[in-house]
Length: 354
Length: 280
Image (cartoon, rainbow over all chains, first blue to last red; front, top):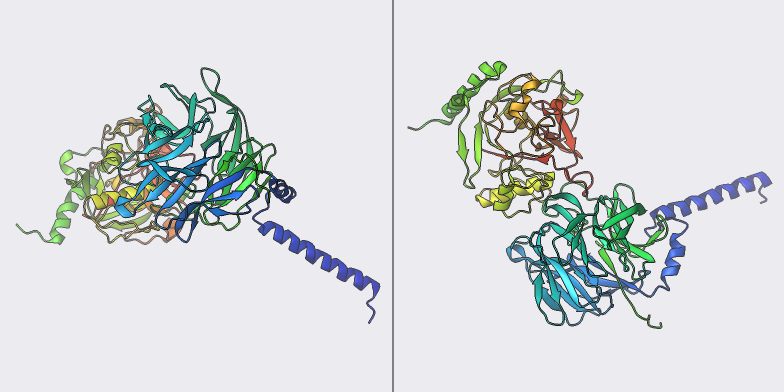
């Protein structure tokens, strides 16, 4: 039977509209899609990027640390412990070790400790009891961390008191000269070793903000950045942070003068309520950012607090990578939404041939 | 002497009735105030008598203009806003911006306030009121946030005027820390004049979380006896105004709704605190 020409055209048009509609729906639903046109192109680029990403994830009620290639391929569970929750991984700048926190024991005996291990998960060592939010010195020889505020376990991110520095070679720990450091979290150590940068919440006279803290002195400077969870670029000249619940902010950072300053603020990534954006960190060459994206917690949950806190379940949260030089040019590299959070880049000297 | 529960209520109600008779002048003698107890944890609470009152204000904001009768059971209410010393005593991280043991705790989300209530209950071997979903068991003997009706009833302390001390905002400075006199900060609790029932800082210092979800139309459908707020809602009720508030928001009937976890986790409010209630 021959279809009249006009009818054939109409049928073709309708079919075309249906295909376009399907593609649009698929695009909207695809968790890998960031800036739509650029996401797949970015994913292709990341396939050749040698540095990796390590993150915390909750599978079947247990937290472990996973490492993946920059495009999300080849995930490997580095910890594999059923009775311990490993969280907040921070690879050393030389790419040989990872420091992290481990929540051990249950109930009243639960405690968060700081540990270190090789990048393949071997030679795991506890370096501090009741401690959290560790970070590395630029030479990968020391780990700084914050002590828990109370003996009892507390999930609240700012429940810290005192900053301590552990020397890997000697195994000795010393306290920061400023004994008033209180309610800090997301600790960073500047590449020149002269400053720490961290969030403060209701501590040392500050309401909430991001502080530069002299590494060997008492000076504390408010960087006047609205938000939390900062991370310094490998050269120490830029800072990224959670600019509210929905944006990753970027600013130029000057730590060379008497008073550190952050200038030229803009947002690199933004999401819209109810999807939050958090945990942004720089890649070793400053080319990319990794961050997390996931739904805001619905309703009230006692004891579990907010999904952006380490160790708080965050269904639907995934790790993403963004091009640091462009606005909102990103792609999700995990797609299972199993509380994939706190990503951090792992320096890789040479990528192994496939 | 054994006193029947009914007689006990009458004894408790008598001073409250006396309060009603003299509210218009805003003057109240200490002898008229209901009794105060000190909890096992050392916190002073006022025994708020059972009774009825007219909730809302025709001259207020739209969400409070449906004036309606509310009848409440007796309850105990903290004499002061929860202080930072209390957070320290219970080993809870003190989120406050302005630090000091006698200052009210602030930057407290609704959930953190509920967690404090449960911690305080456990500390005194009482049954916590809040479950993991933050649902409140009103039958439990532990601490909880006041319902909005309990808060306004306690704040009014028998008064029917805009403020618990009368209707003249020029006298607000004697009773409250607010934008005109606070100097952009909180102040130690209990330094201004209390209301007729001996409760301090019900007006000003920090705005106080109530247990209820906020619904601007709730008064139209609210039950008369022990109303507990809408079953659902994205916001919770805040009452009393704060150190940074204008005089209007400190009024006894003034209602406000806010996100229980703050609308943005990074933008904590240093003007929000709370006080607790529990069964007598």
